[in-house]
Length: 138
Image 1 (spheres, rainbow, N blue to C red):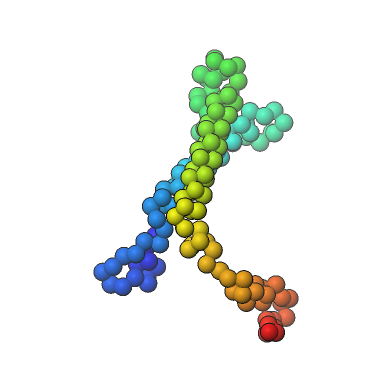
Image 2: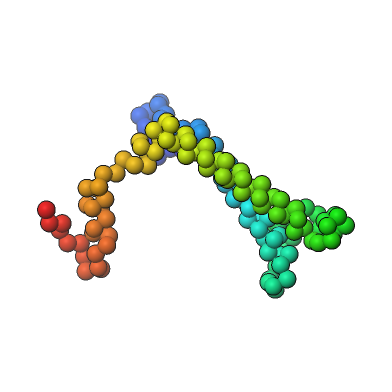
């Protein structure tokens, strides 16, 4: 996303809001979550306790017929492999993001610019009852 997209950039100039590594780690997380959800649905389908099932075409875990021949089950083994692979992708990607955030100062500049006074100024009126905002006494 750029500042120009938000309507704040001067004409003819584009300023990046997030560095490339932050955008890349975001999309890697999105992909890993899709894999985890799809494989989790196949794991859910393999459990005999649950009566509801997700459509097989929506799940990740390989072909049921091939899995039946190899493992004598309907895709649980390969779904677990996909699930753990996506989990490790999330862990490694998260570690890379945290390492980048601390070493580059990204966290300090983007995530923690709020002062305690600003938290009190904005947070106290939100915590008040619906009767309306009351002035903060100083």
